Image (cartoon, rainbow, N blue to C red; front, side, top):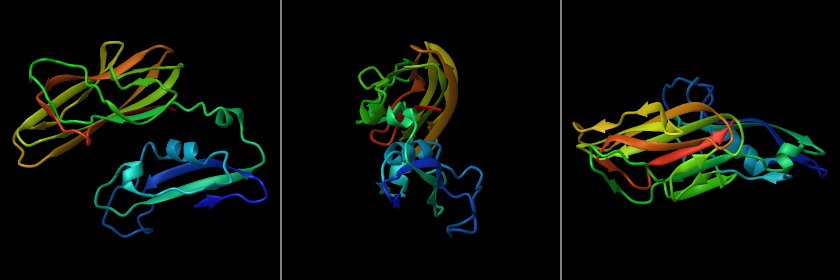
Length: 219
């Protein structure tokens, strides 16, 4: 919990869920430079900026798991201010987090646009859960990630498209596996207003429901 007194408001300076100091928490060795949830700062800002008190659950369920089997913590730097800037007042944050609600069984050689139909958050309403397409509401730098869970003996190779053109690839081949495989990819894109971004299969025959997701946010 963080709070401000005397009528002042919270303004988040930085936030990270993960582990940047290997002396703080036990749990095994890890690269502290990469054990950082990429979306944690924007989530904390959205939930805390402009309030006098803020409660957050520092768990992988809420922030993702940047380093499995390692103890993690939420580190926040904030200030207490009289007034917060117009950007925060207007809540002009663009971020979405969606996943597929059911297992997908696909034809291996038939590319399809993947529709992540269940939305956790969609600030800015730029993501369409019916088409699976994100439409940029304004120009700027955006970060997109998609994670894919594939059953044993299955494959899910995919690509991220910007206005129909490939901008990144994701390989999740579990054809020789005996247990579920989890794969994740991250791509930064500089977008113009109205640009469209989505995920399409290349060679895929299965995608596990609930655990496979598509996320994006404006930096």
